[in-house]
Amino acid sequence: MVSEIKRVFRFFFDKDPLLVYSPGRINLIGEHTDYNEGFVMPAAIDKKMVVGIAENQTNQGRIYSLDFKEEFAFDINSFGPKKGHWATYIMGVTAQLQQAGYQVRGFDMVFGGDIPVGAGLSSSAALEAAVGFALATVFEFGIPKRSLIHYAQKAEHLFAGVQCGIMDQFASVMGKKNHVIRLDCRSLDFDYFPLNLPDHQILLIDTQVKHSLADSAYNQRRQECQSGVSAAQKTNPGIQSLRDMDIALLEEIKTQINGKVYRRCLYVIQENKRVLDSSRLLELHDINGFGEKMYASHEGLSTLYEVSCPELDFLVDFTKPLSYVLGSRMMGGGFGGCTINLVERGHTELLQEEISAAFSKKFKISPNFYLVTLENGTSLI
Ligand code: GAF
Image (cartoon, rainbow, N blue to C red; front, side, top):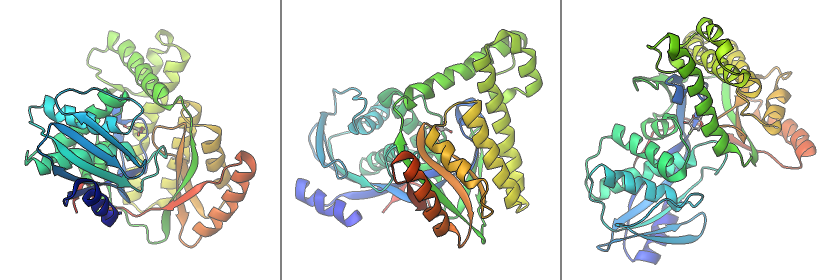
């Protein structure tokens, strides 16, 4: 892909680009906890977005998408969001850098990647991170990685219209080879935890579906969580987010919130605790225990948080009786995309065969499979 980007860049712009990459991510556990100031355990993976960039001495951003085989140009001094179009992520990051006072000048860009779009592997966060890093490098802005994470997240909020948390951009930028990131999404304190799984592998199973309500439902979940927090704040003004609440407090305010808000809050409070418990289990090398937490996480996402879908539930349920699958759950925002599965080494092919046949029969779609390794975050190539 890198040589293809170089070749296309020369073809369109007649020069050599500076090249950067930024990876997609998985999340072991801790779903929809990031925007509730809770805990997550993501990791960068061996699927990436690659961006080639060069200054062009004009006031235009001129871009070519290798995957969409499409060109796009915009005036650096006058542009706005273009929701639903791939260029919105690039313009979004450009706008955030400008807002922060960085003088972005005209640039040429070619980008492409192997992160499946809509699979819940954060292709958009990877693109935002790669673009931010590419602009910062080519114009020598000297932006710290921490700030890039925030600009990328804000681009998603303001130019893509998704009120995402910090997890995806953080994982893409900060990933470390063979390590998981244990991140506190309130303080942004984190540590790298070596993922030692000599007898197991992480297999992603892609439903290949992305139900259309995903973005609106995501923003709605945020509001529902906020309703729970607002109700709790009436008697407990110190509460800032669901991170500060426990089940006892939730029960106290139960009569002041509706059933839906109660279920959303219950899930988040339970999931936050599950992340902390799961992290301890991993430290103790209790892989079976960790797998059980994955199943419990999925159950909560499906029945309380209601962000799963029949295809994801089917994949998770299918693995439950299989002795060689230790845990499985939907991953990311939901309503499609991938499940993450912890599978005994040597059994992934068998699982693929069995699940492929059953899934295709039921949904008339063949799922995709990705055996992932954990890789470094955003960097120059
Ligand atoms: C999406 C969001 F972008 C993340 O911030 C996170 O909330 C995730 O859904 C759910 O855990 O990937």
